[in-house]
Length: 309
Image 1 (cartoon, rainbow, N blue to C red):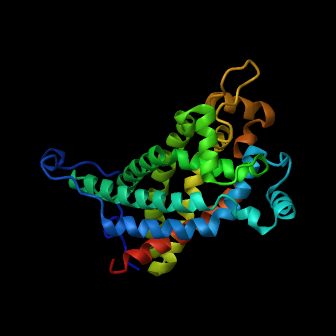
Image 2 (image 1 turned 180 degrees about the vertical axis):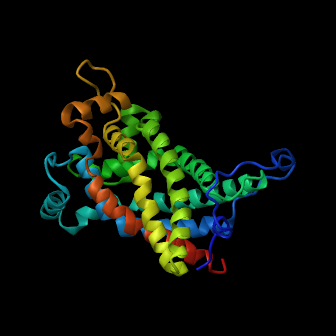
Image 3 (image 1 turned 60 degrees about the vertical axis):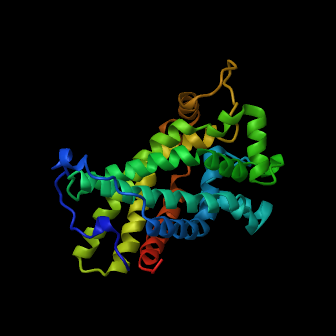
Protein backbone atom coordinates (compact mmCIF):
# COMPACT_ATOMS: atom_id res chain seq x y z
CA UNK A 1 0.00 0.00 0.00
CA UNK A 2 1.33 3.40 -0.95
CA UNK A 3 1.52 5.88 1.92
CA UNK A 4 0.57 9.50 1.10
CA UNK A 5 3.02 12.31 1.66
CA UNK A 6 1.82 13.12 5.18
CA UNK A 7 2.73 9.62 6.43
CA UNK A 8 6.26 9.44 5.07
CA UNK A 9 7.83 11.24 8.02
CA UNK A 10 7.34 9.94 11.59
CA UNK A 11 4.93 12.14 13.51
CA UNK A 12 6.26 14.26 16.35
CA UNK A 13 4.48 14.64 19.67
CA UNK A 14 5.25 18.36 19.68
CA UNK A 15 2.96 20.87 18.04
CA UNK A 16 4.28 21.76 14.58
CA UNK A 17 5.16 25.42 14.09
CA UNK A 18 6.07 27.44 11.00
CA UNK A 19 9.86 27.53 10.96
CA UNK A 20 10.50 29.61 7.87
CA UNK A 21 7.25 31.35 6.99
CA UNK A 22 8.79 34.47 5.42
CA UNK A 23 10.84 32.60 2.82
CA UNK A 24 7.94 30.26 2.03
CA UNK A 25 5.76 33.20 0.99
CA UNK A 26 7.86 33.54 -2.16
CA UNK A 27 7.31 29.91 -3.18
CA UNK A 28 4.42 28.90 -5.45
CA UNK A 29 1.59 27.23 -3.54
CA UNK A 30 1.32 23.46 -4.08
CA UNK A 31 -1.46 22.55 -6.48
CA UNK A 32 -4.02 19.78 -6.14
CA UNK A 33 -2.61 16.35 -6.94
CA UNK A 34 -4.52 14.43 -9.63
CA UNK A 35 -3.70 11.10 -8.03
CA UNK A 36 -5.06 12.20 -4.65
CA UNK A 37 -8.26 13.45 -6.29
CA UNK A 38 -8.87 10.20 -8.18
CA UNK A 39 -7.97 8.01 -5.21
CA UNK A 40 -10.30 10.02 -2.97
CA UNK A 41 -13.13 9.67 -5.49
CA UNK A 42 -12.76 5.88 -5.64
CA UNK A 43 -12.48 5.64 -1.85
CA UNK A 44 -15.62 7.69 -1.33
CA UNK A 45 -17.67 5.52 -3.67
CA UNK A 46 -16.53 2.34 -1.93
CA UNK A 47 -17.22 3.70 1.54
CA UNK A 48 -20.66 5.09 0.71
CA UNK A 49 -21.91 1.88 -0.88
CA UNK A 50 -20.75 -0.08 2.15
CA UNK A 51 -22.19 2.25 4.77
CA UNK A 52 -25.40 3.71 3.31
CA UNK A 53 -27.84 1.32 5.06
CA UNK A 54 -26.60 2.28 8.53
CA UNK A 55 -26.54 5.94 7.55
CA UNK A 56 -30.22 5.69 6.64
CA UNK A 57 -31.01 4.16 10.04
CA UNK A 58 -29.07 6.96 11.74
CA UNK A 59 -30.95 9.71 9.87
CA UNK A 60 -34.34 8.07 10.53
CA UNK A 61 -33.55 8.02 14.25
CA UNK A 62 -32.28 11.60 14.28
CA UNK A 63 -35.38 12.99 12.58
CA UNK A 64 -38.01 10.65 14.08
CA UNK A 65 -39.12 9.80 10.54
CA UNK A 66 -41.80 7.14 10.27
CA UNK A 67 -42.85 7.40 13.93
CA UNK A 68 -39.70 5.86 15.40
CA UNK A 69 -39.21 8.37 18.21
CA UNK A 70 -38.81 5.73 20.94
CA UNK A 71 -37.21 2.94 18.94
CA UNK A 72 -33.60 1.82 19.16
CA UNK A 73 -31.36 1.14 16.18
CA UNK A 74 -32.32 -2.53 15.73
CA UNK A 75 -36.04 -1.83 16.16
CA UNK A 76 -35.79 1.03 13.68
CA UNK A 77 -34.04 -1.22 11.14
CA UNK A 78 -36.63 -3.96 11.64
CA UNK A 79 -39.49 -1.52 11.04
CA UNK A 80 -37.84 -0.17 7.90
CA UNK A 81 -37.36 -3.72 6.61
CA UNK A 82 -40.99 -4.66 7.27
CA UNK A 83 -42.35 -1.49 5.67
CA UNK A 84 -40.26 -1.32 2.53
CA UNK A 85 -37.99 -4.32 2.26
CA UNK A 86 -34.21 -4.23 1.76
CA UNK A 87 -34.48 -1.43 -0.80
CA UNK A 88 -35.51 0.94 1.99
CA UNK A 89 -31.97 0.91 3.34
CA UNK A 90 -30.60 2.11 0.01
CA UNK A 91 -33.17 4.82 -0.61
CA UNK A 92 -31.44 8.00 -1.73
CA UNK A 93 -28.16 6.23 -2.51
CA UNK A 94 -27.62 7.78 -5.95
CA UNK A 95 -27.00 11.31 -4.73
CA UNK A 96 -24.81 10.41 -1.71
CA UNK A 97 -22.86 7.93 -3.86
CA UNK A 98 -22.01 10.77 -6.20
CA UNK A 99 -21.59 13.28 -3.39
CA UNK A 100 -19.39 10.99 -1.29
CA UNK A 101 -17.14 10.42 -4.26
CA UNK A 102 -16.89 14.17 -4.82
CA UNK A 103 -16.59 14.84 -1.07
CA UNK A 104 -13.66 12.48 -0.59
CA UNK A 105 -12.11 13.67 -3.83
CA UNK A 106 -12.19 17.22 -2.43
CA UNK A 107 -11.26 16.16 1.10
CA UNK A 108 -8.16 14.16 0.20
CA UNK A 109 -7.13 16.55 -2.56
CA UNK A 110 -7.52 19.72 -0.48
CA UNK A 111 -6.02 18.01 2.55
CA UNK A 112 -2.93 17.03 0.59
CA UNK A 113 -2.58 20.49 -0.93
CA UNK A 114 -3.04 22.19 2.44
CA UNK A 115 -0.51 19.85 4.03
CA UNK A 116 2.07 20.63 1.37
CA UNK A 117 1.36 24.35 1.80
CA UNK A 118 1.99 24.09 5.54
CA UNK A 119 5.13 22.07 4.86
CA UNK A 120 6.35 24.78 2.50
CA UNK A 121 5.64 27.32 5.25
CA UNK A 122 7.93 25.40 7.57
CA UNK A 123 5.43 23.47 9.71
CA UNK A 124 6.92 20.27 11.03
CA UNK A 125 4.98 16.98 10.70
CA UNK A 126 2.69 16.50 13.67
CA UNK A 127 -0.89 16.43 14.82
CA UNK A 128 -1.30 20.19 14.55
CA UNK A 129 -0.33 20.15 10.86
CA UNK A 130 -2.56 17.14 10.19
CA UNK A 131 -5.44 18.73 12.07
CA UNK A 132 -5.14 22.13 10.40
CA UNK A 133 -4.95 20.72 6.89
CA UNK A 134 -7.90 18.46 7.72
CA UNK A 135 -9.91 21.44 8.95
CA UNK A 136 -9.29 23.24 5.63
CA UNK A 137 -10.51 20.15 3.77
CA UNK A 138 -13.61 19.89 5.98
CA UNK A 139 -14.60 23.52 5.55
CA UNK A 140 -14.17 23.25 1.78
CA UNK A 141 -16.38 20.18 1.48
CA UNK A 142 -19.05 21.77 3.68
CA UNK A 143 -19.27 24.92 1.57
CA UNK A 144 -19.48 22.99 -1.70
CA UNK A 145 -21.71 20.07 -0.71
CA UNK A 146 -24.33 21.33 1.79
CA UNK A 147 -27.09 21.24 -0.90
CA UNK A 148 -26.21 17.62 -1.64
CA UNK A 149 -26.40 16.72 2.05
CA UNK A 150 -29.83 18.37 2.21
CA UNK A 151 -31.20 16.35 -0.70
CA UNK A 152 -29.79 13.13 0.78
CA UNK A 153 -31.48 13.73 4.14
CA UNK A 154 -34.79 14.61 2.50
CA UNK A 155 -34.80 11.42 0.46
CA UNK A 156 -33.89 9.31 3.48
CA UNK A 157 -36.70 10.62 5.69
CA UNK A 158 -39.45 11.55 3.22
CA UNK A 159 -40.40 8.37 1.40
CA UNK A 160 -44.05 8.94 2.22
CA UNK A 161 -44.10 12.51 0.87
CA UNK A 162 -43.77 11.80 -2.83
CA UNK A 163 -40.09 12.66 -3.29
CA UNK A 164 -39.33 10.27 -6.12
CA UNK A 165 -35.75 11.36 -6.69
CA UNK A 166 -33.02 13.89 -5.93
CA UNK A 167 -34.08 16.42 -8.55
CA UNK A 168 -37.66 16.41 -7.28
CA UNK A 169 -36.39 17.04 -3.77
CA UNK A 170 -34.14 19.87 -4.91
CA UNK A 171 -36.89 21.44 -7.04
CA UNK A 172 -39.40 21.32 -4.19
CA UNK A 173 -36.92 22.93 -1.80
CA UNK A 174 -36.15 25.75 -4.25
CA UNK A 175 -39.86 26.27 -4.97
CA UNK A 176 -40.70 26.53 -1.29
CA UNK A 177 -37.66 28.27 0.15
CA UNK A 178 -35.64 29.67 -2.76
CA UNK A 179 -32.05 28.84 -3.64
CA UNK A 180 -30.92 29.61 -0.09
CA UNK A 181 -33.21 26.81 1.06
CA UNK A 182 -30.62 24.38 -0.30
CA UNK A 183 -28.28 25.66 2.41
CA UNK A 184 -30.56 24.88 5.33
CA UNK A 185 -28.38 23.50 8.11
CA UNK A 186 -25.25 25.11 6.63
CA UNK A 187 -24.06 26.56 9.95
CA UNK A 188 -23.87 23.29 11.93
CA UNK A 189 -22.53 21.50 8.85
CA UNK A 190 -19.70 24.01 8.37
CA UNK A 191 -18.72 24.02 12.04
CA UNK A 192 -19.13 20.27 12.44
CA UNK A 193 -17.32 19.24 9.28
CA UNK A 194 -14.41 21.54 10.01
CA UNK A 195 -14.05 20.05 13.50
CA UNK A 196 -14.69 16.51 12.29
CA UNK A 197 -12.15 16.48 9.48
CA UNK A 198 -9.53 18.07 11.70
CA UNK A 199 -9.98 15.19 14.14
CA UNK A 200 -10.20 12.68 11.30
CA UNK A 201 -6.81 13.23 9.76
CA UNK A 202 -4.99 13.99 13.01
CA UNK A 203 -6.35 10.79 14.57
CA UNK A 204 -5.63 8.74 11.46
CA UNK A 205 -1.99 9.75 11.33
CA UNK A 206 -1.52 9.12 15.04
CA UNK A 207 -3.42 5.82 15.02
CA UNK A 208 -1.37 4.51 12.09
CA UNK A 209 1.82 5.48 13.89
CA UNK A 210 0.73 3.74 17.11
CA UNK A 211 -0.44 0.54 15.38
CA UNK A 212 2.78 0.30 13.37
CA UNK A 213 4.67 0.75 16.61
CA UNK A 214 3.24 -2.59 17.72
CA UNK A 215 4.65 -4.25 14.61
CA UNK A 216 1.55 -4.24 12.41
CA UNK A 217 1.88 -4.08 8.65
CA UNK A 218 0.70 -1.25 6.41
CA UNK A 219 -2.65 -2.86 5.58
CA UNK A 220 -3.56 -3.59 9.19
CA UNK A 221 -2.45 -0.13 10.29
CA UNK A 222 -4.53 1.50 7.54
CA UNK A 223 -7.67 -0.48 8.42
CA UNK A 224 -7.42 0.15 12.16
CA UNK A 225 -6.28 3.73 11.73
CA UNK A 226 -9.10 4.50 9.30
CA UNK A 227 -11.71 2.92 11.56
CA UNK A 228 -10.54 4.79 14.65
CA UNK A 229 -10.35 8.04 12.69
CA UNK A 230 -13.90 7.59 11.46
CA UNK A 231 -15.27 7.05 14.95
CA UNK A 232 -13.33 10.05 16.26
CA UNK A 233 -14.70 12.18 13.42
CA UNK A 234 -18.33 11.51 14.30
CA UNK A 235 -17.86 11.56 18.05
CA UNK A 236 -16.26 15.01 17.80
CA UNK A 237 -19.26 16.72 16.18
CA UNK A 238 -22.27 14.41 16.36
CA UNK A 239 -24.66 16.89 18.05
CA UNK A 240 -24.02 19.37 15.24
CA UNK A 241 -24.78 16.68 12.67
CA UNK A 242 -28.03 15.89 14.46
CA UNK A 243 -29.07 19.55 14.40
CA UNK A 244 -28.35 19.84 10.68
CA UNK A 245 -30.35 16.65 10.02
CA UNK A 246 -33.34 18.20 11.84
CA UNK A 247 -33.04 21.46 9.90
CA UNK A 248 -32.75 20.02 6.40
CA UNK A 249 -35.96 18.00 5.84
CA UNK A 250 -38.11 21.18 6.11
CA UNK A 251 -36.06 24.35 5.59
CA UNK A 252 -39.04 26.63 6.40
CA UNK A 253 -40.00 24.93 9.66
CA UNK A 254 -41.19 27.43 12.30
CA UNK A 255 -41.52 27.43 16.06
CA UNK A 256 -44.65 27.98 18.17
CA UNK A 257 -44.48 31.76 17.64
CA UNK A 258 -44.25 31.43 13.86
CA UNK A 259 -40.56 32.31 13.67
CA UNK A 260 -38.25 30.27 11.47
CA UNK A 261 -36.37 27.65 13.47
CA UNK A 262 -32.65 28.34 13.59
CA UNK A 263 -29.87 26.04 14.79
CA UNK A 264 -30.32 27.37 18.33
CA UNK A 265 -34.07 26.89 18.05
CA UNK A 266 -33.62 23.25 17.12
CA UNK A 267 -31.11 22.88 19.95
CA UNK A 268 -33.68 24.19 22.45
CA UNK A 269 -36.30 21.82 21.04
CA UNK A 270 -34.03 18.79 21.40
CA UNK A 271 -33.10 19.72 24.96
CA UNK A 272 -36.74 20.31 25.86
CA UNK A 273 -37.89 17.02 24.35
CA UNK A 274 -35.14 14.68 25.52
CA UNK A 275 -32.52 16.60 27.49
CA UNK A 276 -28.79 16.45 26.65
CA UNK A 277 -29.10 12.76 25.76
CA UNK A 278 -31.27 13.76 22.83
CA UNK A 279 -28.25 15.35 21.14
CA UNK A 280 -26.70 11.90 20.85
CA UNK A 281 -29.73 10.02 19.54
CA UNK A 282 -28.61 7.69 16.75
CA UNK A 283 -24.95 7.80 17.80
CA UNK A 284 -24.81 4.02 18.18
CA UNK A 285 -25.51 3.11 14.54
CA UNK A 286 -23.42 6.09 13.48
CA UNK A 287 -20.31 4.81 15.26
CA UNK A 288 -21.11 1.24 14.22
CA UNK A 289 -21.07 2.47 10.64
CA UNK A 290 -18.11 4.83 11.04
CA UNK A 291 -15.44 2.22 11.80
CA UNK A 292 -15.90 -0.13 8.82
CA UNK A 293 -16.82 2.63 6.38
CA UNK A 294 -13.74 4.69 7.12
CA UNK A 295 -11.59 1.58 7.19
CA UNK A 296 -12.85 0.90 3.66
CA UNK A 297 -12.31 4.53 2.62
CA UNK A 298 -8.74 4.79 3.83
CA UNK A 299 -7.80 1.31 2.59
CA UNK A 300 -9.30 2.07 -0.82
CA UNK A 301 -7.50 5.40 -0.89
CA UNK A 302 -4.10 3.94 -0.02
CA UNK A 303 -4.54 1.12 -2.52
CA UNK A 304 -5.60 3.58 -5.23
CA UNK A 305 -2.59 5.77 -4.49
CA UNK A 306 -0.43 2.75 -5.17
CA UNK A 307 -1.82 2.40 -8.70
CA UNK A 308 -0.21 3.99 -11.73
CA UNK A 309 -2.91 6.58 -12.41
